[in-house]
Structure formats: structure tokens, C-alpha cells
Length: 467
Image 1 (cartoon, rainbow, N blue to C red):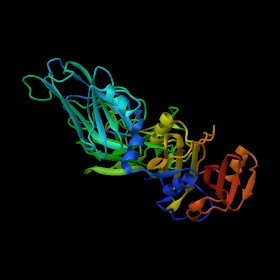
Image 2 (image 1 turned 120 degrees about the vertical axis):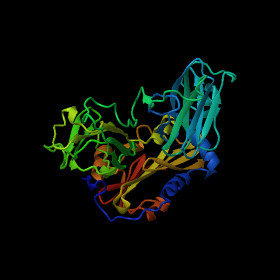
Image 3 (image 1 turned 120 degrees about the horizontal axis):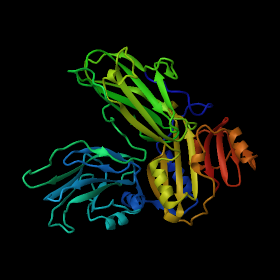
Image 4 (image 1 turned 90 degrees about the vertical axis):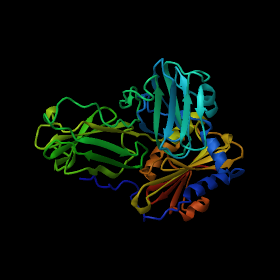
């Protein structure tokens, strides 16, 4: 069963095609009040990577020679480490299978830290920072500083504007082996969400004396989301030798710790079996949740998804009936994307912003541009993803305290805005919004001292700080 796409978003007006140039139009609209130019790609990259934020994915211990597949949000870095024996003759750390621009740092005894790229360069003992995604560092006892026994920390820096997956591998050699010894899977030892946890340690209980459990995994896409994002939660089952059909149980643990079991009829089903009697003649791949819009009414925080396969028709509370390990994945739900959080952490709130909402093709789309005149740039986002940077050389207007773009969402209405801000100074059927008027249909505007709101019917379609 798949959860159907609900009718979330604006409730009035026709569906309109939205130009892919909308983020540019928003940015240019802000630029009409500044002296600006388009930034070359290399300069845009320097701006967005000038200040980094440490990724909230915890600290991971790597095992010798075992690849660790992971990912980083845009413009973040994260540390992992490996325990190297005192008699090691070499240590090689490599990033592979990535894309865009990833950099690698290595340091003895403590994590690599810093709030800028320059900080990371100074703090690390070694670095590999080519323009590509594949990086390698090899050190020996003759290196400066020398290889020695203990914890060696490696930090991966993601300079891309989108989440990036990659593989991190650390390999040391000791005399007489010529390579890694006794490899075991990488084990996360500390976590502060969001982090995709994969499968948990096998629970007690074996399907049968000669049977092996099915391999079961969950994957949410994305694993960090803002209101209006569409969520896919897929699973993959690779059969072991356990015989018979399997029942699939699925639970969502809310940010406050409340578990909600899903049955075939959805949450709170009195019979909490999500799928009954699944035959497993071969590998099976499907979705539990598909194209599910995340409304702004959801509690913020980390959602944990957990699922297990149970021998069909048996009591799932008895782990002896489990024919797979528990599969777990997480979703971090936030009003701001990692890129937006990084910008606010490092540069503060934008001095001005403009944000639009629409549902092209029935899908929620949120475009916004943030003006950082003091930092010399205007950033454009689509559904939280950084899609462009323009230069802004004009004077920096004052930041309007308390007027944060994330407090305005696609479910806001004209009545709700008036309840929040009072009667507008002006209600008009027209307002000069430049090229936006040809892209998003609006039939009335509320004009306040600091903000302008545009509506289609009662639905909020645009909010911007007043020029």
C-alpha cells in the first residue's frame, strides 16, 4: 500500500505553470533597490563556502579498510576517526564515489574544527582540497607531523550547494600484513540527528536453526525536510533463507517519542500490520510512503521510521518470530533547510527577503530570495535548496527584527495574516512587483509598514519586506 498524495497547499485559484527562472526574478526584484551584478560561478562558490557549519551527523569511528557510505548536507563538514596501532607503517584516507567539490582534512588526537575554510586549513595537520570530489591523503612515520598510534580524525567538507553522498575509507598497514586487518562495519558512536542509521544490531531470536534472516533496509528521501517538501520512504528486502511469507510492521516515532503504528488502513489501525503475507521469491523494492507532502502543521524535530519483517501470521511482540533485523531511518523536519540554517548561523538574518508560494502541477513550490547587502550577495532558494547567488554592492538596509521568512508558509490565509498583524494600512488590487506579476496570479495585496502580502483569493501567494 502507498499513502496517497493529500490535498495540501492553496485551496483557491487555477494551477499555473511556474517558470524555472522564478528564483532569478525574485533576486532581480530585490536588486532593483541595490547596485548589483551577476557573480561568476567561482565567486559564488567562494561566498557560499566562506563560512561553514558542522554537520549534525555525529562522530563516527571507521574500521580499517572498510568503506563507510554516508552523506553531508550542503556547505557542511563532519568528523570521523580511526584508531591506528602504534606499529602502523602508513595510513591512507580517501573520499570516493562523490560528486561536485569535496575536501578532506586529517588531524591527530582531536577533531578538525573551524567556522571558515581558512579555519579548517589552519586547524588540520594534512589536507587534500582539489577542485573535484575524489581526495586522498597518505601519511607515514616520516611525514610531518609523523604517523603515530592513536586516534586520527578525518573531516570531510562539502562545498556543494546540495546534499552530497560519498564513500570515506581509512586504511592503515602494519608490518607483516601488507594491508588492513580484521575489517568490520563502521559503527556510529555518537549521533545528534539528523543521521541515517541503516539497520540496527540484530535482535535476539533466530528464524530457524538453519535459516538466515532477510536483509531489510529503509531509506527516506530527503532525510532533512522543510514544510512543503515531498517525502518518499522506500524499502528494499533481499531474501535470506527463512521460509514462508512475511508480515511487514511499520512504526513512526514522533519527535516527542510517541510511537504510531501504521496498519493497512493507515495510522491507528486496530490491526497494526502494514503489509500481510509478503511472498519473497526474490529481491523486493517498494515504498511505504510515496510523494507525501509534509504540511507546516507537523511538529518540528526528528522522526524515526522503523520496520521489521515477522513470519506471517505470528505475534510480532515475540522477537523469535522476526525474520529480519529492524530497519531504521530518520527524517529531520525543520522550518529551514541546512543551507538556510548555515547562512543564518554564519551571517545572521537577511536584511530583506521575498518569498512566493504556488502549486504548479499540483505540487507545492516555495521560492525565496534573501538579501545580504553587508556580505555582498543575494541568495535564491527553491524549496530550501540554494539555487543561485547574485552580487549586491548596494548599502545594507537594517534587518527587520522578528520578521523571519520561515514564519510564513503556504497554508497562511488573508484572515490569518490580519489576525496576526492587524488591519493593513492599504488593501489594493494592484502592486508593483515587477516581473512577478506575469508569473504568479494575485488578485489583492495587503500593504503594511514593513511587509507586503499578495493573495489569490484567500490563499497567501507572496510575502516580501517592503522596499
